[in-house]
Length: 150
Image 1 (cartoon, one colour):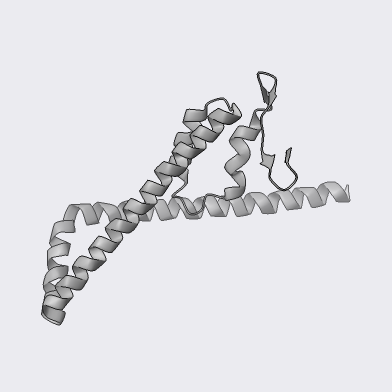
Image 2 (image 1 turned 180 degrees about the horizontal axis):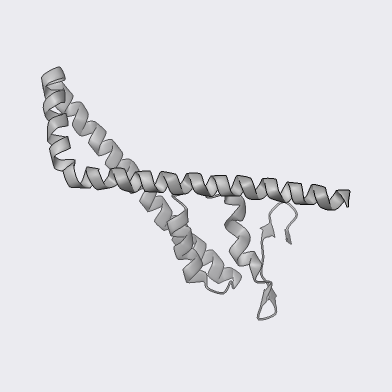
């Protein structure tokens, strides 16, 4: 009975932590969408005001630094999206080679989830390892350290 009680307490703690993490994520997404609405709606006016303010404070050098900052942010976003695309394509190719069913869909899922910083990397092998066999071939996670299928 004590073992069952400790198991229930452990499960309750895990569920509470998971619920809090999901709730935090939902709140962050809602706030992001709320802020994005105003940025997209009034973005040009805010950019003009920012450029005017920086020009009044730092002159031409301020405009140049603002331009450099804008190009840097744009480059970082392009880099993140490019890396996500390459990861999705490479994952799809790997899933096809391993014979995982739904390889294209899993590659697309990899593309969308790879830029998400809260995506736990331990779960990245779950979808392919959830199907145990396909055409009499073992499908799962390959351990590089032991050289065996997990």
